[in-house]
Length: 172
Image (cartoon, rainbow, N blue to C red; front, side):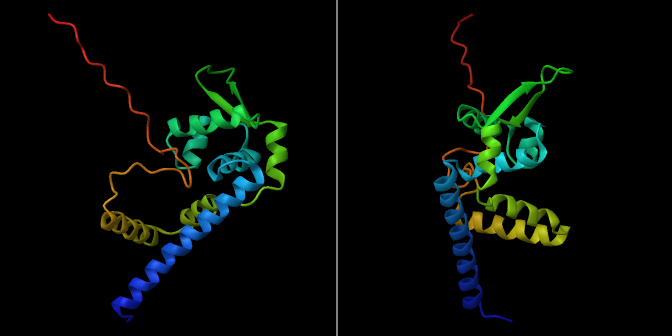
């Protein structure tokens, strides 16, 4: 069995490797496409499976639908995606890539979050639980359990939008 100091050193180095690949890939994506890695991931998913419902896209990316809407707003403003209401159910919105979005995706770099999700989804229960427990422990050590998770190298938070509390100022 490895000593405690060797295990701690290996954990720290693995965390450094993760940050390194996330940072490098995110910067590369932004330099080459002008998109954040999360925005590029949306484009890459839609290239394969569009049109797609907003809720399905959010589920596929493990994001809250409110977070997904913000990403889509920015991509639509750049002319890369378009929204269309379903003819059968007007509440349902489908997202599709524009021609500009398809062109951008062709030579774009891989998105590390996609690789991570694909890899995690292939793991069997105990391995996945072990990773989850280990990361939860790291989060607890750092004291950041209550910190809202930002998308990778983004200021956007992956959390449901909170409704503003209305204070009743009228008196009986």
